[in-house]
Image (cartoon, rainbow over all chains, first blue to last red; front, top):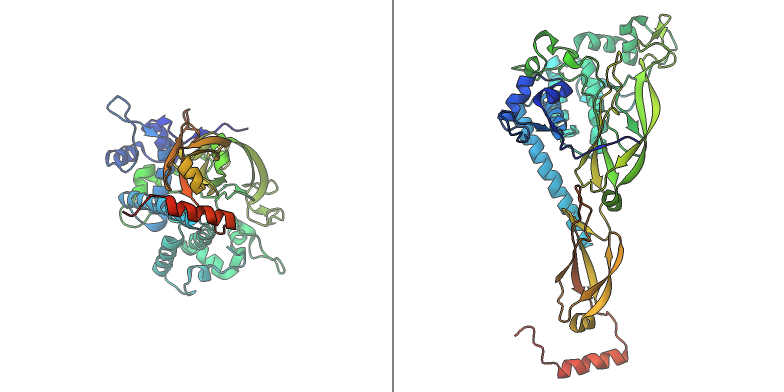
Length: 99
Length: 345
């Protein structure tokens, strides 16, 4: 049985996130400063990052690599995809209830 | 992607297409099929894998030249085996990354390990990502196994109660015969067919925590792709999808259910059975209840992630019999005659 983290709220430092995704720390910090990735207040000058940022950042990386969009564009795309997913779920639920 | 598919056909370009045309075709199709733009769409994911494989080969002039000359045997030729002997049918194409796959659960083998090998044109952010000369190739990853993302579909009950799930996976590992080179004694390795990788079955038990929701992500540390040269393995990220429930509608931590009641139960009030995620409970319908009225069953919703439970809302729906017998008809007519109720006045 493998223990599992749940919902990836665990706060990580910029260094850990950078090392996990293979990025430079400065880039992760810049993306956080620009509001392109989620941060968690740490009570210090430097915020922390919830672990789910690792997944988010990798998606941004893939979109950057595969589609040629920049990080700001990737963040918008992921936000819109999330909203579309939510709307699709609601639509499916409405269809189900109408049957 | 089908094994015999031609890379040019996959990208929809002619064999004499320029590198720009190949890139353009890839980008156009990638926008359509990219897994991050089509979450949960297995067909799109498969299409994208095929695209990626085709583009990986055709975007590198040297590889493209070998592919043009030797077809699907090009990898073995590149690895040093020379031209394939007559009758050798070629190898299954090597798989990208070391991501696991499952039979029952989709484990898309997104490969992050090659992240950074291709820039997107213009300013190359990957220089910044990996730093200077290390920006090309594997960068600072130092062989860490690929992280793998996959979707796991659960029933509402599983999400509520948690539990265990056994996942059957297939993991790509370096071929034990050729050590991952794809060659044995100067010929394409027979074990892996020259791919350098073999697919091994793997079973893991996953602890599904109580309180997961649609869109939750579970991380299994060290269960992603195997690392090279003793490096740590990657992680497995399972994105949870909840199957629609035939009875309940999920609204955050709360559940909603429609409960049919009779006209006389609505007028007189009644104690009726109502379904909950844990079984049936007795619900008091107040006298004078209306269709659409919501009654709250406190604490009968879904288990919350950090303890506690949501509520269940029972939406009443007054239903009338489609057919009535003679006695029922007489009583309804009598009711109609004596009742002073005027809902439209």
